[in-house]
Structures are given as structure tokens and as C-alpha cells.
Amino acid sequence: MTQISKILVVFALLFTGLVYGQQDPHYTQYMYNQNILNPAYAGSGSELSVALLGRTQWVGIEGAPDTQTLNIHSQLGSPLGMGVGLSVLNDQIGPAKETNIGLDASYTFQVSEQGLLSFGLKGTYNMLRVDLNGGVLTNDEGDVLFAEDVQDNAPNVGAGLYFRTDRFYAGLSVPNILENHIYTLVSDNDIQDVSDKMHWFGTLGYVFDLNENLKLKPSTMVKMVQGAPISLDLNASLFINDKFEIGLSWREGDSIDAIIGIQASPDIRIGYAYDHTLTNLGDYNSGSHELMLLFDLNFNKKFIKSPRFF
Image (tube, rainbow, N blue to C red):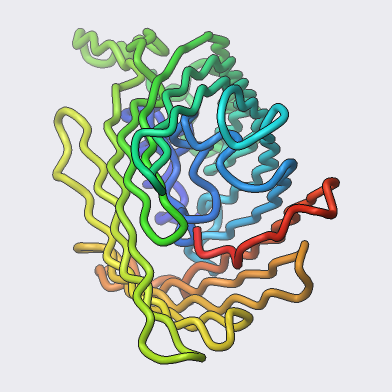
């Protein structure tokens, strides 16, 4: 095992909440994948929306984070009223593997001529496994830190608000409210309890018309968690003929990212993002890759679907 991998393992244990989606996951294409973080987003798109996303982080570092998500949500009858969602997240960092299954329910009200406000609730079940005795750390026998595997299953609940028009969105959410105890670390007579931490997420975006064929969409995501610096994402994307998206993102103190999106058909969107690491960790990896497939299915053919910007 390389030194970098050992650092990742210790990082995963000391901050095991990070294994729960790396302290709730970061996605570069978060604007199309919001109900992972905000249950009020469920039902905000077409009659049925299905998103598949895979993220490979810090390519070249053994044991670096690798994440896959399946995200399904739908309106129940009309844009107003109930929406439901299902999400499955699989996340691995070093020997730590986590699976998170979430169910979302939302209710949408019309609050202005064009504005819709949704309130959502989320229920999740997290399954964490950290395999420390499966030959991963054979050179560290006798170290109390790596004496036994970690296994933990825990339910959680979350809530969120989401306001939208056809050009603007704003969201506020707490996907995990309960601070579940995960692991007790005993080393050199020092006892440390590791718990899942509550995260606040704020999102905001707007689409401007530059001319008949060109649109600009600035957006941002802010993440706040106790004991860690505020995380800020800033993004700006250009839409060409409502079919092609080219964007740049900046994640404070972490990376600069490029986004490419193609509306392959009225129902299918393909997105790719590349993150270039700005920290010293960038000396040991060749960046992060994120691929997304988004299916928006409308079964009512009389309904004219607007272009998808978020």
C-alpha cells in the first residue's frame, strides 16, 4: 500500500462521516442531480426523470474516492402536488465502502405567476463497511487503529426547500439531520467518538438570454458543516441553441472544473465534467472525471417540454 493510500485510510477512519458520501458527496454537475442532496427537488422536472452518474476522483491515487449514483424522481400527476424520488449511492474510498438508499417525498405549491415552491422530506438508510483485515494493511499489524473492521448501519432523515421558475432556482436542504454515532476510536488511552455530521446545502442559479441562440447560466452551491470551512462552488455555463453546454466551475481551495453537456434528444442529456486539483494533492493525481446520463420522460405528448437547464 502506498503512503498516499495509507493517508486516505486514516482520513476515512478519523472522519468516517466523510465516508458517508465523503461527508455528503460533492458533484460538479450538482445542478442536474439535486435530489441526492435536496428532497424538495423530487418531481421538479418531467413526469419521470432518471439520472445515472459515475465519479472517479483523483485518478492515479490508489484507494481514491469512486462514486456511483442512481437517481429517480417523478411528479405524481402534475407539477403541483406530490412528487416522489428514489436514490441509490455507492461510494468507496480505500477499504471503506458505503451504500446509501434514500426515499424522497415532496409537495409543490404555486406561490406566484411563474414561481413554484416545494417542501421535501428524505428518509435514508446507510450501510458502511471498512475492511481493515482483508490484506489491506498487512504492514501495520499490531496497530490499534487497524485492529478490527468497521461495520455500521444507520437510518437518517432530511428535509429541504426548493423554489423554481423556468429560469431560476434556489434550494436549501439538510439531507442528514441525525448525527448518528458511527465508530469509537481507541488509541494510546485516547477515546474518540466519530459521528455523522449535519450538513447544510444552499444552491442558486439563473438563466440569462444573451441572444436568440445563446444563454448564460451562473450558479453556485454552498456547503456548511460544523468543524469544517465553508465550501463554495461557483459555475458559469453557456448554452448554444439549447443543445450544447460549455461551462467552467471553481471549487474554493480545491479545484477548477470543466463541464460539457449535450442534449442528445428531447429526452436524453449527456454530461461530462473534468476536475483539475489545485491543492498539493494535484502533484499525485491526474484529476477527477464525472459522467452523467439524464433521461427525462414525458408520457403526456400534449405537454410541451421546456429545455433542461437545471
